[in-house]
Length: 109
Image 1 (cartoon, rainbow, N blue to C red):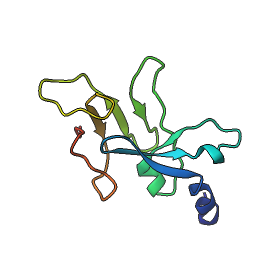
Image 2: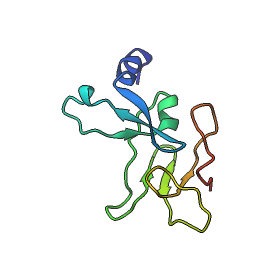
Image 3: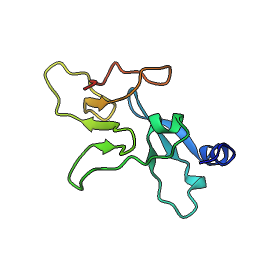
């Protein structure tokens, strides 16, 4: 996507913390037009790429980016695990450390 078009497209999204320490870009409801509300991969978004996070299968709980292989996976609680706001511990793969990522509540595979 050309840089001029990207800036316009990027303003349609906002960074949201879906559980403690895990962020995605979410389509703003007032910018949805005919699109359903969806999540974009934060890794790809920072590289000016629009990549929708999908569930690999209907019965799976995880969300996956096919472009960069980001995987956000709720896991079964273990004794002493730190829980997210939703009450589930979270594991994530390929989340970069940086100012917008707090990785204290996730496991990096």
